[in-house]
Length: 289
Length: 126
Image 1 (cartoon, one colour):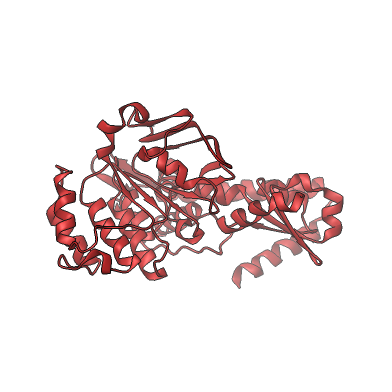
Image 2: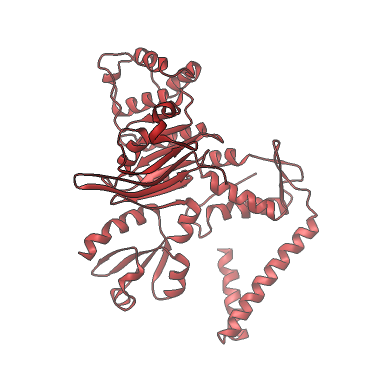
């Protein structure tokens, strides 16, 4: 087993009403990990902790085997970040912004930057604050992808982008992966993660529910659909999440095979999509209340 | 190498790749020594996870259908075609025997079993 590129262990942070509790996941080199969860679940806090913008109350964050919380300044040039709503100095041209950025990053790859600019339909003479959100995200990406970082962190990079460009962006990101580089990105758009992300970490109510591969996800999670009398008989405890109406219920299970056996012929048992998991889990607390 | 993935299929993605590549090797569409794309390349082309692709390749390698030569890539193995087919036939026989056991254990008679199998065969054609 290779050492994870990024390893969070027991990371906790409390502020105000919000608390991140005992959050952890491991991202091996060469893979793309999607951080998913409803708004306010703690995705951004986790990302900020990795970037050194939030100091955890407890827990550890290791990057390439070193303590990121202690050696952060020495390690962070290997981590590139694209925020959810990139902002740039008003009035500055993309060329100027790039030049400033490049001085901070000795491994700057100018040829690659030009290539990406062309590909993303941007021109160096454009003025950053007159760009649309989608264009600013693209520009932030040209900067992040041209500085030879080992970890690329993107916070909701696809928000505000149309489906066509989202697809292109994800393919483009996947192309930048190699055996040592990894990508971490957060999103609440489940279709962005389906299939392409190697690992999926689900965050909910300040906790990491799981980190899993696509295959495991598809093989273990299921949705049971049946009549209310069946729910009455079998009880709610079987389900990780539940939704019901006058005509029946939908229950989320973490044991697809078991559910198939148990409900054979009496209910519909299907594989759960990421969206099913997210939606049904999100309902659990309100349903119980 | 032709691969078509379906999201609606009951088979997991890795299994769909495995089945399709296996079928192409066993049918001779992919021939001995032919290079397969790297795991990463295939994942990129199909827009799927590297872990999924790796799982399919690992399984193909375990079945002796492909070889990975360190630093050079992955190639269709030199199969003893007859041996491979025999192995597949044995596989199917075992699974059928398992189904038969299960049927007997639940008191399903020969006739009903034949009906079930005929039905399955018909559905397979749709």
